[in-house]
Image 1 (cartoon, protein in one colour):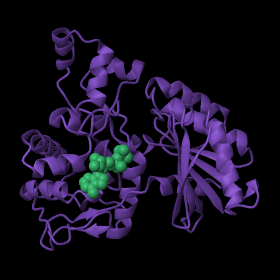
Image 2 (tube, rainbow, N blue to C red):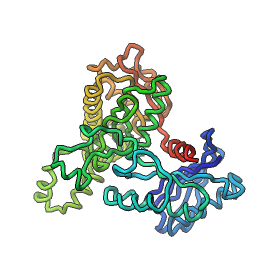
Image 3 (cartoon, rainbow, N blue to C red):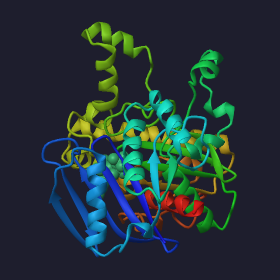
Length: 391
Ligand code: ADP
Protein backbone atom coordinates (compact mmCIF):
# COMPACT_ATOMS: atom_id res chain seq x y z
CA UNK A 1 0.00 0.00 0.00
CA UNK A 2 1.32 3.45 -0.94
CA UNK A 3 1.38 6.20 1.65
CA UNK A 4 2.71 9.75 1.34
CA UNK A 5 4.40 11.47 4.26
CA UNK A 6 4.24 15.26 3.93
CA UNK A 7 5.84 18.21 5.73
CA UNK A 8 4.54 21.53 4.39
CA UNK A 9 6.20 24.83 5.28
CA UNK A 10 5.12 28.29 4.20
CA UNK A 11 7.24 28.14 1.03
CA UNK A 12 8.26 24.50 0.91
CA UNK A 13 6.77 21.04 0.72
CA UNK A 14 8.78 17.93 1.59
CA UNK A 15 7.48 14.47 0.78
CA UNK A 16 8.38 10.79 0.91
CA UNK A 17 6.29 8.03 -0.58
CA UNK A 18 6.42 4.68 1.19
CA UNK A 19 5.38 1.17 0.33
CA UNK A 20 3.75 0.09 3.58
CA UNK A 21 3.98 -1.87 5.77
CA UNK A 22 7.50 -2.63 4.44
CA UNK A 23 8.45 1.03 5.04
CA UNK A 24 10.30 1.11 1.73
CA UNK A 25 10.91 4.65 0.41
CA UNK A 26 9.81 4.73 -3.25
CA UNK A 27 10.48 8.39 -3.99
CA UNK A 28 11.21 11.50 -1.96
CA UNK A 29 11.79 15.15 -2.58
CA UNK A 30 11.18 18.75 -1.76
CA UNK A 31 9.51 21.69 -3.48
CA UNK A 32 11.15 24.99 -2.58
CA UNK A 33 10.51 28.72 -2.93
CA UNK A 34 6.78 28.13 -3.48
CA UNK A 35 5.12 31.47 -4.29
CA UNK A 36 8.47 33.08 -5.16
CA UNK A 37 10.43 33.65 -8.32
CA UNK A 38 12.80 30.80 -9.20
CA UNK A 39 10.79 28.10 -7.49
CA UNK A 40 12.15 24.60 -8.04
CA UNK A 41 11.97 21.03 -6.83
CA UNK A 42 14.29 18.11 -6.29
CA UNK A 43 13.28 14.49 -6.35
CA UNK A 44 15.21 11.41 -5.40
CA UNK A 45 14.31 8.09 -6.97
CA UNK A 46 16.37 4.88 -7.31
CA UNK A 47 19.32 6.62 -5.66
CA UNK A 48 19.32 9.42 -8.26
CA UNK A 49 18.65 13.05 -7.43
CA UNK A 50 17.14 15.41 -10.04
CA UNK A 51 16.57 19.15 -9.71
CA UNK A 52 14.03 20.94 -11.91
CA UNK A 53 12.83 24.51 -12.15
CA UNK A 54 9.04 24.92 -12.10
CA UNK A 55 6.58 27.73 -11.64
CA UNK A 56 5.01 27.07 -8.24
CA UNK A 57 2.50 29.76 -7.35
CA UNK A 58 1.09 27.80 -4.46
CA UNK A 59 1.10 24.39 -2.75
CA UNK A 60 -1.53 23.03 -5.14
CA UNK A 61 0.88 23.60 -8.05
CA UNK A 62 3.48 21.58 -6.17
CA UNK A 63 1.04 18.72 -5.52
CA UNK A 64 0.01 18.66 -9.21
CA UNK A 65 3.65 18.36 -10.29
CA UNK A 66 4.29 15.72 -7.66
CA UNK A 67 1.42 13.64 -9.06
CA UNK A 68 2.80 14.03 -12.61
CA UNK A 69 6.21 12.87 -11.40
CA UNK A 70 4.73 9.86 -9.59
CA UNK A 71 2.93 8.82 -12.79
CA UNK A 72 5.77 9.51 -15.23
CA UNK A 73 8.28 7.66 -13.03
CA UNK A 74 5.88 4.71 -12.77
CA UNK A 75 5.81 4.94 -8.98
CA UNK A 76 2.03 4.71 -9.38
CA UNK A 77 -0.14 3.85 -12.37
CA UNK A 78 -3.28 5.52 -11.03
CA UNK A 79 -4.06 8.00 -8.26
CA UNK A 80 -6.22 5.63 -6.23
CA UNK A 81 -3.11 3.57 -5.43
CA UNK A 82 -2.26 6.32 -2.91
CA UNK A 83 -4.34 5.24 0.06
CA UNK A 84 -3.22 7.80 2.59
CA UNK A 85 -1.42 11.10 3.05
CA UNK A 86 0.07 11.84 6.47
CA UNK A 87 0.79 15.47 7.31
CA UNK A 88 3.14 16.81 9.92
CA UNK A 89 1.23 19.44 11.90
CA UNK A 90 3.26 21.45 14.37
CA UNK A 91 0.64 22.39 16.96
CA UNK A 92 -2.21 20.24 18.22
CA UNK A 93 -2.62 22.21 21.45
CA UNK A 94 -4.09 20.25 24.38
CA UNK A 95 -6.72 18.87 22.04
CA UNK A 96 -4.77 16.14 20.24
CA UNK A 97 -2.78 13.52 22.09
CA UNK A 98 -2.46 11.30 19.02
CA UNK A 99 -2.78 11.45 15.26
CA UNK A 100 -6.21 11.92 13.73
CA UNK A 101 -8.01 11.51 10.39
CA UNK A 102 -8.51 14.98 8.93
CA UNK A 103 -12.03 16.26 8.28
CA UNK A 104 -13.47 19.80 8.24
CA UNK A 105 -13.72 19.89 12.05
CA UNK A 106 -10.06 18.95 12.41
CA UNK A 107 -9.10 21.60 9.85
CA UNK A 108 -11.05 24.20 11.87
CA UNK A 109 -9.30 23.13 15.08
CA UNK A 110 -5.83 23.27 13.49
CA UNK A 111 -6.75 26.72 12.18
CA UNK A 112 -7.92 27.85 15.61
CA UNK A 113 -4.57 26.71 17.07
CA UNK A 114 -2.71 28.99 14.63
CA UNK A 115 -2.40 31.68 17.29
CA UNK A 116 -0.10 29.25 19.17
CA UNK A 117 2.00 28.45 16.06
CA UNK A 118 1.51 31.36 13.66
CA UNK A 119 4.41 30.39 11.40
CA UNK A 120 3.64 26.70 11.18
CA UNK A 121 -0.02 25.70 11.43
CA UNK A 122 -1.21 27.92 8.53
CA UNK A 123 1.58 26.49 6.35
CA UNK A 124 0.71 22.92 7.36
CA UNK A 125 -2.90 23.65 6.42
CA UNK A 126 -1.89 24.83 2.94
CA UNK A 127 -0.33 21.40 2.37
CA UNK A 128 -3.37 19.59 3.79
CA UNK A 129 -5.81 21.51 1.60
CA UNK A 130 -3.72 21.05 -1.54
CA UNK A 131 -3.51 17.26 -1.11
CA UNK A 132 -7.18 16.92 -0.15
CA UNK A 133 -8.09 18.76 -3.34
CA UNK A 134 -5.85 16.78 -5.67
CA UNK A 135 -6.20 13.37 -3.99
CA UNK A 136 -9.76 13.36 -2.65
CA UNK A 137 -9.98 9.58 -2.30
CA UNK A 138 -6.89 9.23 -0.08
CA UNK A 139 -7.34 9.37 3.69
CA UNK A 140 -5.58 12.41 5.18
CA UNK A 141 -4.05 12.12 8.62
CA UNK A 142 -2.63 14.84 10.87
CA UNK A 143 0.42 13.80 12.90
CA UNK A 144 1.16 16.42 15.55
CA UNK A 145 4.56 17.51 16.83
CA UNK A 146 3.01 18.22 20.23
CA UNK A 147 0.96 15.01 20.63
CA UNK A 148 3.70 12.80 22.09
CA UNK A 149 4.17 15.28 24.96
CA UNK A 150 0.52 15.23 26.02
CA UNK A 151 1.30 12.49 28.57
CA UNK A 152 3.25 15.02 30.65
CA UNK A 153 1.77 15.47 34.13
CA UNK A 154 0.68 18.91 35.31
CA UNK A 155 3.82 19.23 37.43
CA UNK A 156 5.84 19.21 34.18
CA UNK A 157 3.65 21.41 32.01
CA UNK A 158 2.45 24.19 34.35
CA UNK A 159 4.56 27.34 34.53
CA UNK A 160 4.89 29.23 37.82
CA UNK A 161 2.49 31.89 36.54
CA UNK A 162 -1.09 32.77 37.51
CA UNK A 163 -2.98 29.48 37.04
CA UNK A 164 -5.72 31.35 35.11
CA UNK A 165 -3.18 32.01 32.34
CA UNK A 166 -3.31 28.26 31.77
CA UNK A 167 -7.06 27.74 32.14
CA UNK A 168 -8.10 30.90 30.28
CA UNK A 169 -5.24 31.49 27.84
CA UNK A 170 -3.77 28.02 27.30
CA UNK A 171 -0.31 29.03 28.54
CA UNK A 172 1.49 25.79 29.41
CA UNK A 173 4.40 23.70 28.22
CA UNK A 174 3.38 21.92 25.00
CA UNK A 175 6.74 20.66 23.74
CA UNK A 176 7.72 20.11 20.11
CA UNK A 177 9.79 17.62 18.04
CA UNK A 178 7.33 15.05 19.43
CA UNK A 179 7.38 12.93 16.28
CA UNK A 180 11.14 12.55 16.62
CA UNK A 181 11.07 11.87 20.38
CA UNK A 182 8.35 9.28 19.72
CA UNK A 183 10.53 7.57 17.09
CA UNK A 184 13.54 7.55 19.43
CA UNK A 185 11.44 6.12 22.25
CA UNK A 186 9.95 3.38 20.05
CA UNK A 187 13.42 2.49 18.74
CA UNK A 188 14.88 2.22 22.23
CA UNK A 189 11.94 0.16 23.50
CA UNK A 190 12.76 -2.41 20.81
CA UNK A 191 16.52 -2.20 21.37
CA UNK A 192 16.23 -2.61 25.15
CA UNK A 193 13.36 -5.11 24.84
CA UNK A 194 11.52 -3.06 27.44
CA UNK A 195 8.03 -1.61 26.92
CA UNK A 196 8.30 0.88 29.76
CA UNK A 197 11.83 2.23 29.86
CA UNK A 198 13.03 5.45 31.46
CA UNK A 199 14.92 7.37 28.80
CA UNK A 200 16.50 10.71 27.99
CA UNK A 201 16.14 11.48 24.30
CA UNK A 202 18.22 14.33 22.84
CA UNK A 203 17.11 15.74 19.48
CA UNK A 204 19.93 18.13 18.55
CA UNK A 205 19.51 19.87 15.21
CA UNK A 206 19.15 23.50 14.27
CA UNK A 207 16.19 23.32 16.63
CA UNK A 208 16.98 21.22 19.69
CA UNK A 209 15.13 19.61 22.55
CA UNK A 210 15.51 16.93 25.20
CA UNK A 211 12.73 14.75 26.60
CA UNK A 212 12.49 12.71 29.78
CA UNK A 213 10.59 9.48 29.14
CA UNK A 214 9.17 7.72 32.20
CA UNK A 215 7.74 4.21 31.95
CA UNK A 216 7.75 4.54 28.16
CA UNK A 217 5.84 7.83 27.86
CA UNK A 218 6.84 11.49 27.89
CA UNK A 219 7.25 12.93 31.38
CA UNK A 220 8.96 16.24 30.60
CA UNK A 221 10.53 18.07 27.68
CA UNK A 222 12.70 21.13 27.21
CA UNK A 223 10.67 22.99 24.58
CA UNK A 224 7.69 24.71 26.12
CA UNK A 225 4.95 27.13 25.15
CA UNK A 226 6.91 28.13 22.06
CA UNK A 227 9.73 26.49 20.10
CA UNK A 228 12.20 28.83 21.82
CA UNK A 229 12.95 27.50 25.28
CA UNK A 230 15.20 24.99 26.97
CA UNK A 231 18.40 24.29 25.05
CA UNK A 232 20.49 26.79 23.16
CA UNK A 233 19.96 26.26 19.42
CA UNK A 234 21.32 27.33 16.03
CA UNK A 235 19.72 30.77 16.14
CA UNK A 236 17.41 30.50 19.18
CA UNK A 237 18.38 31.57 22.68
CA UNK A 238 16.58 28.84 24.63
CA UNK A 239 15.85 29.66 28.30
CA UNK A 240 16.68 33.25 29.28
CA UNK A 241 15.77 35.62 32.08
CA UNK A 242 12.60 37.33 30.79
CA UNK A 243 13.66 40.68 32.34
CA UNK A 244 16.24 40.95 29.57
CA UNK A 245 13.46 41.68 27.07
CA UNK A 246 12.12 45.02 28.38
CA UNK A 247 15.65 46.06 29.41
CA UNK A 248 17.17 45.64 25.94
CA UNK A 249 14.09 47.18 24.28
CA UNK A 250 14.73 50.35 26.24
CA UNK A 251 18.53 50.33 25.99
CA UNK A 252 18.63 49.74 22.23
CA UNK A 253 15.32 51.34 21.32
CA UNK A 254 14.00 48.09 19.85
CA UNK A 255 10.39 47.03 19.40
CA UNK A 256 9.06 43.84 20.98
CA UNK A 257 8.92 42.27 17.52
CA UNK A 258 12.54 43.15 16.88
CA UNK A 259 13.68 41.64 20.17
CA UNK A 260 11.62 38.48 19.63
CA UNK A 261 13.10 38.20 16.16
CA UNK A 262 16.62 38.45 17.60
CA UNK A 263 15.85 35.83 20.28
CA UNK A 264 14.57 33.45 17.59
CA UNK A 265 16.79 34.19 14.60
CA UNK A 266 19.98 35.88 15.75
CA UNK A 267 20.81 34.22 19.06
CA UNK A 268 22.09 30.74 19.94
CA UNK A 269 25.23 29.60 18.12
CA UNK A 270 24.92 32.50 15.68
CA UNK A 271 24.49 35.18 18.34
CA UNK A 272 27.25 34.02 20.67
CA UNK A 273 29.84 33.12 18.02
CA UNK A 274 29.01 35.90 15.55
CA UNK A 275 30.01 33.34 12.90
CA UNK A 276 27.24 30.92 12.01
CA UNK A 277 24.25 28.94 13.20
CA UNK A 278 25.79 25.79 11.75
CA UNK A 279 27.66 23.60 14.21
CA UNK A 280 30.12 22.52 11.50
CA UNK A 281 31.27 26.15 11.06
CA UNK A 282 31.45 26.55 14.83
CA UNK A 283 33.59 23.42 15.23
CA UNK A 284 35.91 24.52 12.41
CA UNK A 285 36.33 28.02 13.88
CA UNK A 286 36.87 26.63 17.39
CA UNK A 287 39.56 24.29 16.03
CA UNK A 288 41.31 27.37 14.65
CA UNK A 289 41.25 28.98 18.08
CA UNK A 290 38.29 31.36 17.71
CA UNK A 291 37.35 32.16 21.32
CA UNK A 292 33.71 33.04 20.72
CA UNK A 293 33.16 29.89 18.69
CA UNK A 294 34.66 27.91 21.59
CA UNK A 295 32.42 29.76 24.05
CA UNK A 296 29.28 29.06 22.00
CA UNK A 297 30.15 25.36 21.87
CA UNK A 298 30.66 25.28 25.65
CA UNK A 299 27.31 27.01 26.24
CA UNK A 300 25.55 24.57 23.89
CA UNK A 301 27.08 21.54 25.63
CA UNK A 302 26.50 22.89 29.14
CA UNK A 303 22.80 23.45 28.57
CA UNK A 304 22.41 19.89 27.26
CA UNK A 305 24.26 18.53 30.30
CA UNK A 306 22.08 20.60 32.64
CA UNK A 307 18.89 19.18 31.13
CA UNK A 308 20.16 15.60 31.15
CA UNK A 309 21.25 15.97 34.80
CA UNK A 310 17.92 17.42 35.84
CA UNK A 311 15.92 14.75 34.01
CA UNK A 312 18.15 12.02 35.46
CA UNK A 313 17.28 13.22 38.95
CA UNK A 314 13.57 13.50 38.12
CA UNK A 315 13.47 10.01 36.62
CA UNK A 316 15.39 8.29 39.44
CA UNK A 317 16.98 5.81 37.08
CA UNK A 318 17.64 5.96 33.36
CA UNK A 319 17.77 2.91 31.07
CA UNK A 320 19.33 4.74 28.10
CA UNK A 321 20.25 8.13 26.67
CA UNK A 322 20.26 8.81 22.94
CA UNK A 323 21.48 11.46 20.52
CA UNK A 324 19.63 12.33 17.30
CA UNK A 325 19.19 15.23 14.86
CA UNK A 326 21.84 16.75 12.58
CA UNK A 327 24.22 17.56 15.45
CA UNK A 328 23.37 14.54 17.63
CA UNK A 329 23.90 12.16 14.74
CA UNK A 330 26.96 13.78 13.21
CA UNK A 331 28.96 15.80 15.70
CA UNK A 332 31.43 13.54 17.48
CA UNK A 333 32.84 16.53 19.36
CA UNK A 334 29.46 17.51 20.83
CA UNK A 335 28.63 13.95 21.91
CA UNK A 336 32.07 13.51 23.43
CA UNK A 337 31.91 16.80 25.36
CA UNK A 338 28.42 16.04 26.68
CA UNK A 339 29.27 12.49 27.72
CA UNK A 340 32.49 13.53 29.45
CA UNK A 341 30.55 16.08 31.49
CA UNK A 342 28.12 13.33 32.55
CA UNK A 343 30.84 11.41 34.40
CA UNK A 344 29.08 12.15 37.71
CA UNK A 345 26.18 9.99 36.48
CA UNK A 346 28.56 7.14 35.66
CA UNK A 347 28.38 7.76 31.89
CA UNK A 348 31.51 6.64 30.02
CA UNK A 349 32.17 7.11 26.34
CA UNK A 350 33.70 4.52 24.01
CA UNK A 351 35.76 6.88 21.85
CA UNK A 352 36.21 4.40 19.00
CA UNK A 353 32.49 3.70 18.83
CA UNK A 354 31.76 7.44 18.90
CA UNK A 355 33.91 7.94 15.79
CA UNK A 356 30.93 7.62 13.48
CA UNK A 357 28.29 9.75 11.77
CA UNK A 358 24.63 9.05 11.15
CA UNK A 359 24.54 5.41 12.23
CA UNK A 360 22.51 3.61 14.85
CA UNK A 361 25.18 2.75 17.39
CA UNK A 362 25.93 2.16 21.06
CA UNK A 363 28.67 4.68 21.87
CA UNK A 364 29.08 4.20 25.63
CA UNK A 365 31.79 2.02 27.15
CA UNK A 366 30.83 -1.43 28.44
CA UNK A 367 31.21 -0.22 32.05
CA UNK A 368 29.10 2.92 31.53
CA UNK A 369 26.27 3.01 34.08
CA UNK A 370 23.87 4.24 31.38
CA UNK A 371 24.04 3.01 27.78
CA UNK A 372 24.20 5.87 25.27
CA UNK A 373 23.15 5.50 21.64
CA UNK A 374 23.18 7.44 18.40
CA UNK A 375 19.83 6.99 16.65
CA UNK A 376 19.27 8.52 13.20
CA UNK A 377 15.79 9.91 13.71
CA UNK A 378 13.06 9.37 11.12
CA UNK A 379 10.04 11.62 11.45
CA UNK A 380 8.79 10.75 7.96
CA UNK A 381 8.42 7.06 8.70
CA UNK A 382 6.52 7.85 11.93
CA UNK A 383 4.04 9.90 9.88
CA UNK A 384 3.69 7.06 7.37
CA UNK A 385 3.22 4.48 10.17
CA UNK A 386 0.45 6.47 11.86
CA UNK A 387 -1.29 7.01 8.53
CA UNK A 388 -0.99 3.34 7.60
CA UNK A 389 -2.40 2.31 11.02
CA UNK A 390 -5.57 4.32 10.35
CA UNK A 391 -6.10 2.62 7.01
P1 ADP B 1 16.74 21.01 11.57
O1 ADP B 1 16.00 19.82 11.03
O2 ADP B 1 16.37 21.38 12.98
O3 ADP B 1 16.80 22.19 10.66
P2 ADP B 1 19.06 19.27 11.40
O4 ADP B 1 18.56 18.15 12.25
O5 ADP B 1 19.16 19.07 9.93
O6 ADP B 1 18.26 20.61 11.71
O7 ADP B 1 20.50 19.68 11.97
C1 ADP B 1 21.23 20.75 11.47
C2 ADP B 1 22.51 20.86 12.28
O8 ADP B 1 23.22 19.63 12.16
C3 ADP B 1 23.42 21.96 11.82
O9 ADP B 1 23.92 22.70 12.94
C4 ADP B 1 24.55 21.20 11.17
O10 ADP B 1 25.76 21.87 11.31
C5 ADP B 1 24.58 19.93 11.99
N1 ADP B 1 25.37 18.91 11.29
C6 ADP B 1 25.05 18.26 10.17
N2 ADP B 1 26.11 17.48 9.79
C7 ADP B 1 27.09 17.68 10.69
C8 ADP B 1 28.41 17.19 10.87
N3 ADP B 1 28.92 16.34 10.00
N4 ADP B 1 29.12 17.60 11.95
C9 ADP B 1 28.61 18.48 12.84
N5 ADP B 1 27.36 18.97 12.72
C10 ADP B 1 26.62 18.58 11.67
